[in-house]
Structure formats: C-alpha cells, structure tokens
Amino acid sequence: MKLATLKDGTRDGTLIVVSRDLKHAIKADDIAPTLQAALDDWTYAAPQLIDRYDALNRAPGSRAFEFEARQCASPLPRAYQWADGSAYLSHAERLRKARGAEMPKSARSEPLMYQGGSDAFLGPCDDIPLESEDWGLDLEAEIAVITGDVPMGIAKKDAGECIRLLMLVNDWSLRNLAPAELAKGFGFFHSKPASAFSPLALTPDELGPAWDGGKLALPLVVEVNGELLGRPNAGVDMQFEFPRLIAHAARTRPLAAGTIVGSGTVSNADQSVGTACIAEKRALESLASGEPATPYLKFEDRVRIDMLDAEAHTLFGAIEQQVVKYAPPK
Image (cartoon, rainbow, N blue to C red; front, top):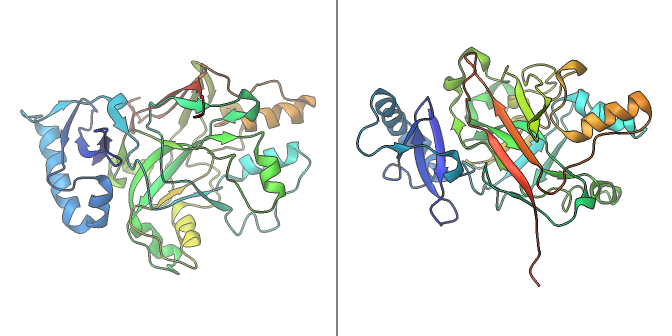
C-alpha cells in the first residue's frame, strides 16, 4: 500500500491512497482524516485502506485524481517523535577520521541516536530556506520507518512487528554550526533544520524481496544539480537494522504510534558508489589529498533523492528540493 498526505491548508493535511504506478490517487479521509489518525487506529484503518488501494489499482474510478508529488506534504507533516540513528559505520568513520577523531568504543555494539525536531517537516518538493551559506548546508539521504505503538523495553526480535511504513529522508544538516553545539556536550539543535520525507510512505509488502524485515536492499540515488553524488545500497554495510534501532529507542520509554526512526546517512564501504551527503565526500577528499574540494550547498542549488525498483520505477517518489534565501521576520 502507498500512502501520502495532500496539502490542504491545515497542519496535518488529508490522507490519500496512491496507485502503485503513482499515476492516480484517491482521498481516504472517510477512513482516517490524516495518516496519524490511521496509525493511531491501524487495526481498524489498515484493512480499509488496503481495500481502497486494491480498488484504485484495478480501476481509478470517478473519485480518483492525478497524483502530483508537488501537492504533497511529507507523509507525516509533523510527528510525535523523530529519532535518527547512525546505522552505517562507514559514514561516521570517514567523518571522524577526516577530523582526526576516533570512533566510540561502543560503535559496533550500541547505536548512536539523536532526537530531532518533529513539529514541522518540509514537504518533499518544498524549497529549503537558508539564511546564510556560511552555515554549511548539507543533505543527508536516509531510509526511515514509521512505527505503531512500541512498548518500553521491547526486544529486537519483536520490534520489527511494530514497523508500519517506510519512507526516504533528507535529514538536512548545517555542518558549520554543528562543532560548536557538540562541544557543549548537549547535542544537535541549530545545526539540524527541518527534515523532509519522500512523497509516499509504503507498507513493507510493497518492497517485495528488497525488504527482509530489517533493512531495504536497494540503491539510494542522490543527485546535486543534476549530477550524481552517489548511489549507495541501503541494504549493504548497515551495522544496526531497523528492529535494533527501534529497540534502542524504546529501551527506557514507550514510543507512540507515528514515531519516525531514521537509519542515518546511507553509506557503503565501497567508495566507487559515491556518497549520500556532501560531508562524507569532503571527508574522502580530505583523506586523499589533505583538503576538501566539494563545497556545501549554495542558494539555488537543487537536490534529488530517489529509490528505484528492479524495473527502474520510483518506489517512494523523489525528494526534489531547491535552496532559497530566507529572510527572517523583523
């Protein structure tokens, strides 16, 4: 099943069901007004949404309309929680090595995770507002899952049953603001602006054999200004799979339905596949030649993040965004 949220002028939008080929959509607000409402009562809503999805794929019908990703908010325009992990160790290793730092001793046994802002996500095709190019704007392409209710202390072997939907993520970062924040020992805040998610959220069955219950084994295609930055495979070199990340997040507290858990920047040890963020490319350049050559994003730069199936069809719809100059209120 493929679900999306149509912008309608409200904070949470309108829940829609989208056909498998992404050509048509139909409102589902008579079943659940929003995606969060559907997640809150998944046992009731999911079977009805599946029936509507199956009917839409058979024949669009008179109530269907043409699907347009630019009319969509992120599937959850806001969420009760956004917890982002760091499951691909080659990403963290390269960034730390380039600045002369070592990985934590627990890096291979305990996931890194931070809690990001979740009160206002950007839509998949919304502009990226940036006040200053000096802040070092970077994209970070990831995979994320949306959970149902997760009890505190859940075991890894049971956590996969809590996964309801999957999405792509652009977890924006302001790289030049991060060092000062981290030096305070209290984590990210200013350096993590609003993230954006793919137009569509998919139930795991839509991914076929590419989804094994813990990771998604397909390349993530990342472009900047039409040039390929990288296409690392999200199923390769993932140290901590999603059930492990969910169990880690729920170790000392329950997670409410609608919690989003991210994988962290997708990264492969094989350098030939490129990278899913600029900072990692700069780290590789620094390690090779002593200094980075690739700049961070500037005004008017465009980014695109997508994932294709075996027939080269987009699965989640693409995240396509442009950086624009932001003027703060006076």
